[in-house]
Amino acid sequence: MSDIPFVKSFPFAYGQAAAVSPLVRRVIAKNPGPYTFTGSGTYIIGREGGSLAVIDPGPDDAAHVDALVAAIGKGRVTHIFITHTHRDHCGAAAAFAERVGAPTLAFGCHPDGDGTSVEEGADRDFRPDQFIGDGATFEGDGWTIAAVATPGHLSNHLCYDLKEEAALFTGDHVMGWSTTVVAPPDGDMGDYLDSLEKLLARDDRRYYPTHGAPIDKPLPFVRAIRAHRRMRDGQILDQLMKDRAQIADMIPHMYQGLDKRLQGAAAMNILAHLIRLQRIGAVEADGPPGLRARFRLAKGGEV
Image (cartoon, rainbow, N blue to C red):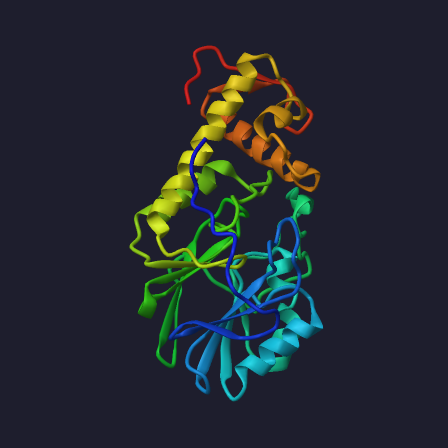
C-alpha cells in the first residue's frame, strides 16, 4: 500500500475566522460528514479592510454566510471564486454574492448526469457571473490570484494560485485528510492523473484544500497520491486475474473495513480506474463500462 501522509487533526472552531497566513483567513462551515470531513472551509484572501477575494463560499447555510459577512467586516469583496460545482463548495454562492455585491467566477456550470450523488451532490442551479479558464489572473490590494485548471474530480474543477505566498487552493483535487472521489462519467481518472502531473511541475509551497488542514509539503504529498492511484490500478488488475469481474466483487478485497457510507464512492473510484484502463487497452468490458458491467484483462494489454 502507498503511504499518503494524511493530516487528520488540526485546530479550528466553526464559524470563526482564523488567520492561516498573512493574507489568508479561513472560516469552516458546520457541515461535517463522510465526504466533507470536519466541514467546508471558505478562504478569505486579502488584508482586513481592503479588497478581498473569497474562495468556495461553502454550503447553503445561513449561519455560515453570516459568519463570512462578519469576517469580512469593513473589507470589500471583489471576487468570489468557485473551485467546482458541488453544493458543499458553491451552495451558498448566490446568497453570499447578494450580501456582498460581488461576482461569482468558475470554470463552468455543473454537467448533467455526472454520477456524483455519492458525494455532497451537484448544484445544478449554479451559474457563475463570469466563466474563467486556465491562467486567468485577478488582482486586489496586495494579492494576485491565477486560475489553474485541474479537471478530474469534475471536469470544471479549478485550483487557485495565490502568487504572493506561492499557495494553491486545491478544492477537492488534493485533500490532506483523504483521497479524492472521481465519479464517472464527468469525473475522469485519466484527467485526474494528468492534473496531478500538472501540480508536480509547479513550485507551490503550501496547499489549502476546502476540507481539512493545509498541506505544507505539497510535492511529496502529490507523489504519494499518484503512487496510491497506481497501486489501485494494480489491485484492479489483480482482481481481474482472480476472476472477480464486477466492481461489487472487488470492493471487499480492495477496501477492507470500509465505512458503509463510502461504498458508493469506492465503487465510483474503481469504475473510474477501469474506464481509464480500458481506454489504454489494459482491460475490456462486456458492453459499456458501468457499475454492473463485467470486466476482464485485455489480451496483451499493458498499464
